[in-house]
Image 1 (cartoon, rainbow, N blue to C red):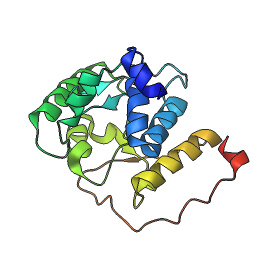
Image 2: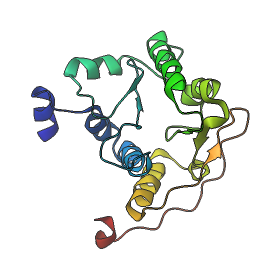
Image 3: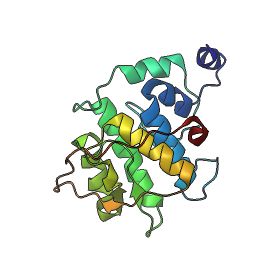
Image 4: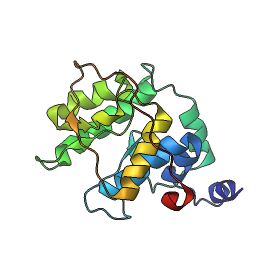
Length: 183
């Protein structure tokens, strides 16, 4: 398997590993972030991945089998210090270096506090999310992000206020793309 070979040879990136593990949803998040992030280039300077034990990491960071096993030991939905402490450390550094007018776009789960609570506590009104995520499952959000990136149409954002309800009815399914539209 090509990914296993890359891992064994020390060439597998975090973005590639998470795209394989999480499938469509993560691939959608990464593709969208690289398409619409500042600079809009293949160099993901402004794209950061929340990891289970290593805080914020860039997608091009090379991973090891030991690192992936380490990630698998932590439930990020819990109060595990191995998740929260590195994330808090990196968020504190990021807020100090972020331009004052910059906003932070969360493409992760918005329905629970596993990301929202800590991020909103640091970024306040600068933390935004796509309201079109409300009511969608992971696969639907991934499809929406991939489609938006492919079409070059950035989603609208709203301030992520932790006190507001971020759950709602399921929106209509995305229309199926034919083979020509997928490439």
